[in-house]
Image (cartoon, rainbow, N blue to C red; front, top):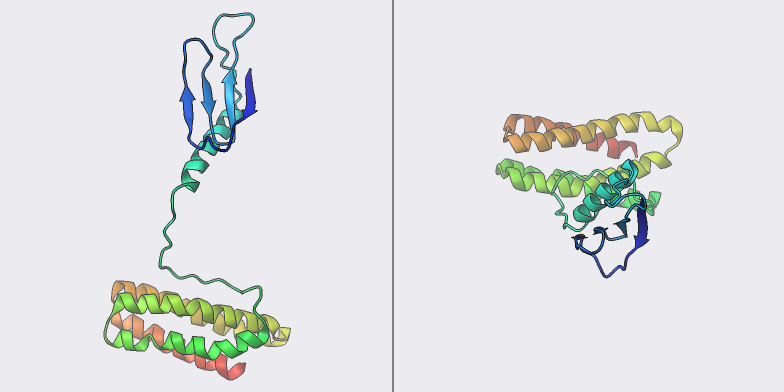
Length: 190
């Protein structure tokens, strides 16, 4: 049978120890498995259950994945709502964030596609948070048209990001015009 025994936190590396005089020990960050000798036979018992083996593999994989540093991609981060954001904060910030999204025009005119994508990706999540917060605080009867405009706006932001990636100037300008129209409609309704 296999026996679980805790090991110290200082031993963070995965190791397998083999010795001729003692049974093999597999050590992992949180526990170790020691194979015992059977009383009926001379060989080492290999009756580690499937769950224990799969758990060990999962633990080893997660410890190696968790220890590698993660690079943050410069992608669209469209979070929905900041939990501590109030209606007043969202309402005061929405115009500035909308202007930041519209400032991508200069980069589109100069056909600086990568910079336009970065500007769009950095400014649109803030606008999205503000707009979502405002929609949630509105009365239920006023929400559906705002949600449609919200959907139109951020679908065009995504399409514009893809068009800029493909360096398709015609689609970028079409999406930009739709974004301008959606922002002006939203700002006039709130």
